[in-house]
Amino acid sequence: KQEVTQIPAALSVPEGENLVLNCSFTDSAIYNLQWFRQDPGKGLTSLLLIQSSQREQTSGRLNASLDKSSGRSTLYIAASQPGDSATYLCAVWTGGFKTIFGAGTRLFVKA
Amino acid sequence: DTGVSQNPRHKITKRGQNVTFRCDPISEHNRLYWYRQTLGQGPEFLTYFQNEAQLEKSRLLSDRFSAERPKGSFSTLEIQRTEQGDSAMYLCASSPAGGEQFFGPGTRLTVL
Image (cartoon, rainbow over all chains, first blue to last red; front, side):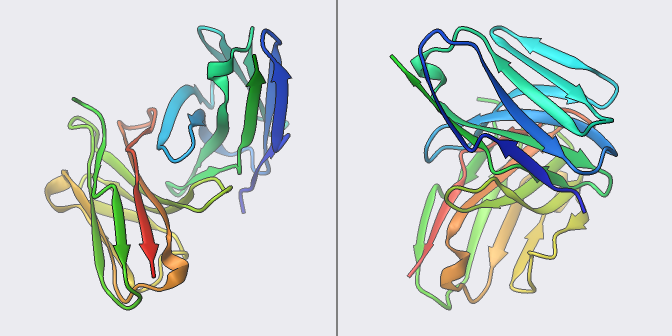
């Protein structure tokens, strides 16, 4: 059974700091992994999608990596800003058409 | 607007009543997903459609829950005989084959 874990559960950093969010999954047989952000009471906003054959994806200040063999993905946020404050979720799409989410990392960037 | 839309955005109902939610996906997406999210947790997968076919259904989806996607366009999620434990945010997403999932704003259900 696929399980997705995100560490840390919460993180508070000063503005301008570079940071790394971690996502681990127990079954390496995934089709893709997607990172999202969620603001309180809102839906999810897609940040990056990494296909199983890819190692990383970049979008602006965000870089996501994928190591299937070790069951890990990281989301790197450069030069954090207060507007980056949100919950960040990773999700893996498995065989059988299910998408399994982690519980998320709540990020607070202090001005 | 080409995003995923969901209606209603909020629903308050009494225990035992039936409720129905609607999701309109991005028009060119053939895949549609329903999730349920409670406070402090990630979304839990409920069901998946490819075009009009329901190909996957979570064990979380009891026989009180039913979903449809007639003609492979919009989808509805119905909960019969609601219970207080059904209170949650219900999220819908759509994607092209193998692509990014795009989420709607969700429907927040409160069962009194």
